[in-house]
Amino acid sequence: MNIKTILVTALTAGSLFAQAPDKELDARIQIYGEAIRPSAFTLSTGETPEAARSFGLGLRFMGEVGSAENWYYEVGGKLDSSSKLNLNDANVNLTDIRITQSYWVVGGGYLVPLGKQASLGFHFEGRGEALAAQGAVFSAGLLKGRVDSSSTYLRPWGRLTLDASFYLGTLHPFVGLEVAGTPVKTTQTQPIADLTQMDSRTLRALAPNVSAAFYVGLHL
Image (cartoon, rainbow, N blue to C red; front, top):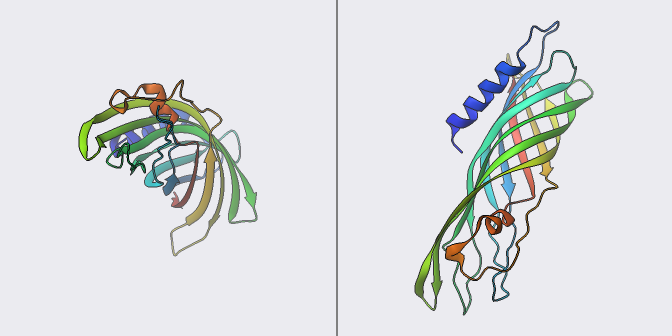
C-alpha cells in the first residue's frame, strides 16, 4: 500500500458522494498510528510461531453526508507495517521471516455528539488487506530455503472511536483513540510442513483480527 493509492481512493470516493449541501458539512482528515499482532499458525512439528506486534501509519478522509446528519463516508488506508516470527529452537529458526500487512479502506460511520466538542463513533468498513511473508528458513544454522508468499484479503471491519476537538488559533484539530475488529477469520486446513511452499490460506490465517490506534487530525 503506497500513499498514491490512498489518495486516488480518497478522491474517487469523494467525487461519488459529492452533492450540494443545505448546510455547512463537516470534513476531516486524520493521520493514525495502528498497532496489530498477526495470528499464530501451526507447523507440522506442532510448533506455533507467531510474529511480534507491529505499528503502522495510516491516512483517513471523512466527509459528512449532506442528507444524513452525523453520518460520514470514509476512505483511506494504512502503509506497510511488519514484524518477524519468534520461533528459534533446536528444530528450526524462523526469526528472519517478516510478516507484512497494509490495506486500503472504504466505509462509513456515525458520530454521536458528546457535548459540543467530543464524539463517540461507530464505523463499518471494508478493508482490502495485502499480506506477505518473506525471509529465510534456517535449521541447525544452515539455510533450508526462502519464504516469499503474498495474498490479498477483503474483509469487513468495525471500529469504535472516541475523539475530542478543540481550537488552536484558526485551526480546528482533534485527537482520538480507537479499537477495531473483524468477524471474518481464516483458519489453516492443516499444519504446514514446508514454509517455502506457504499457501494463500495459511498466510491469510496469519492476518490480524483486532487492532488499536490513536489519531490526530483537522476539521477542514
